[in-house]
Length: 61
Image (cartoon, rainbow, N blue to C red; front, side, top):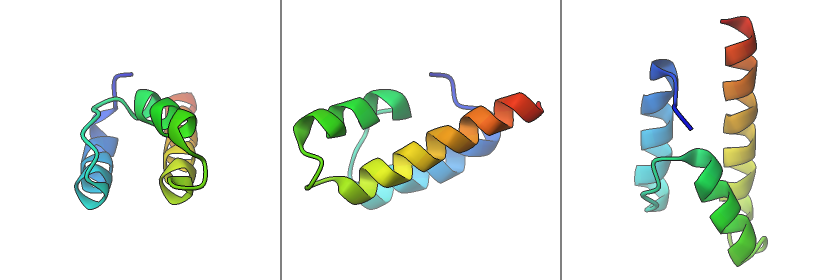
């Protein structure tokens, strides 16, 4: 997934805070969901919200 420029900083901050390094938020979400919903619930919720905002941003653009 290609991140629009305006979302790069926010996603990079998320990666730094969580210690993850996947440049693709969709891939990271699927990896975390397959590992354990309980362990990564906060990160899964954030990524789901982030991806939703990406989609809304594309609709507006």
